[in-house]
Image 1 (cartoon, helix red, strand yellow):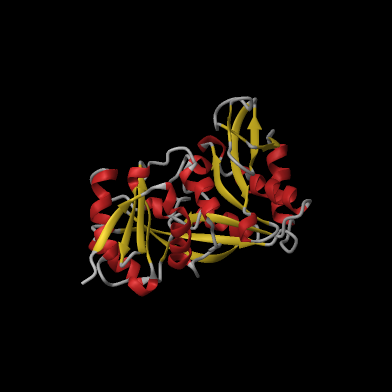
Image 2 (cartoon, rainbow, N blue to C red):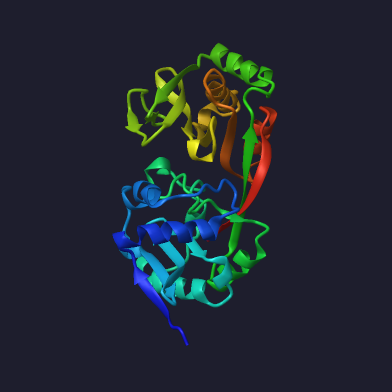
Length: 302
């Protein structure tokens, strides 16, 4: 009988990992086929990558599964479709969990959920960790068996800038400006809410932010990023944050509209909001008022 082997990551596995990765996630929301170069650039070569926390399962000389984790918990578990329901995922998790700490934190399976580091995480923007489909009963049963619980539901929403009604967003921006708010677009940089605009952190890759300032301080920020791998003209909104004292002043709507107007003037055709908690009706109402519609539902596990 062929025995299952656990193999730690090494650079020579990259081409085989790319094939396995694509086989595991083909058909997932926002899936794009990756190569060895993509994995090296996006995961292996990114800050925070720990090779000891990436394990592969080999059966009969072929890679049939992998599991990846780190400081943020569990990032991904993938098993080739024709090898599922044979305990491979369970074995991978049992080998990986001592390396990533006690307990179970599966929020990393959706990299946009509760992730303040955003683009600085090694798995940001990858199919790895893109999320667990709420309707995927097999995945849910597997995670429950591993000791996780369904903690929340998250939604992705999508809009086409050229087709949406810009009036609500423009009205929001006008109201905010009448209250003394000013807006700016920053490329590859993101300011800190509550600090002066000059206090900024760099963003990796093609990331940008819209900032609202009031009385010299940053009152809110929205972070966007381009996703050319998903097709031409695609971009997403990673986060929207408004200082507590400035909420309900149309600042959030104005920030999103600022991004949409900038993207509409360029070669962009579609925008997707990464994940919004279904327990945050105010956030959902904001995006839907601006013309966004739900396009995917994810289960967040912890």
